[in-house]
Length: 314
Image (cartoon, rainbow, N blue to C red; front, side):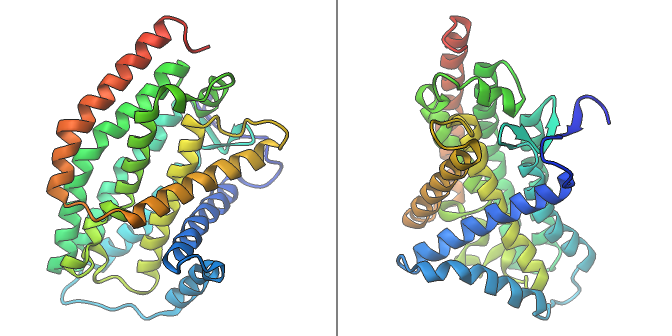
């Protein structure tokens, strides 16, 4: 394979694709379990409900609408999960990413950008009003949060002088990036939640439009989309750990344990906060993103650039 795209070789003989799927689904189950526990008021037994729901969805009969485009709908639903899993591939585990490229941050952002098309297909395919409105809402939100998210990724790359996630982790050996980039950390998590249309950013699947893009989904199609949302939110938490919390580094405990603990803490933070904030109207979110978040993330990038030029980062 080309030097710029190589499968990591530190995971034994297990195929990288199998590892990507396993890690991605584990992250998705973690998100779903934490969400169910939060919704149940802290009842730990609720954490197994996502598995039961997934098994039921696999055997559930698909509903249909008048003159749907079934092919596009199934492509879109499957693509949501596939793109979420692809975003996991460049997250370093135990110091090595499952897929190593010369531009890991570009890979991660590209998976998010392609998610626009996948969710749009899910909204377009049923030939129904509510899913279509949900698809438009997702596109409107995407235009607003994509730029702030890109600026947060660029900011970490500037500090580490690299687009590789492993280099970004290594650059935090002395000081985690969250200390000098708290705004970028917060915007990254908010943007990731918006990409998964989760918590206060769930307007594309809002109850005021009967569930939006999810309104006509059932059976395996709904399972793929819901699983993709959970996996992507878990991938966002894992990437936030990589970019801002030093990845697998930490004292006493082995690297994988530190990575798991940090990622789980971020998942709890995102899920608990998301469940306690009110739904944000799409037009308000777009206004805040363009008028507030874009200038602030640019300012954050400028501050980090000045610090990098003056040798603040190793």
